[in-house]
Image 1 (cartoon, rainbow, N blue to C red):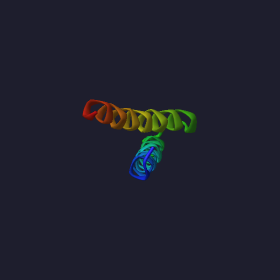
Image 2: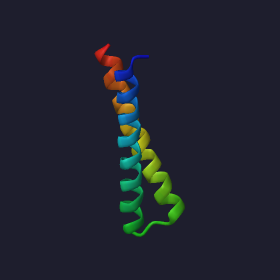
Image 3: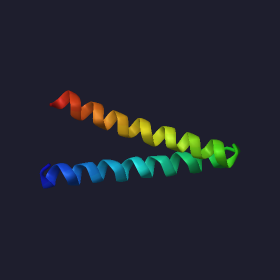
Image 4: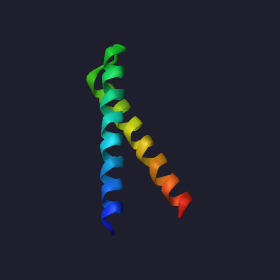
Length: 60
């Protein structure tokens, strides 16, 4: 892997983590339990990362 590919992967992981944390905080603020908020945040982060990888696969 080239340096650019590694850096873009780290950027994608960072963005997915930020999406997951924001999703969990929004869900928690909406009044759901902590476990459900974590699951909602993880789902949002995984979806974001999946969309990124799908876009990369479609590009190549």
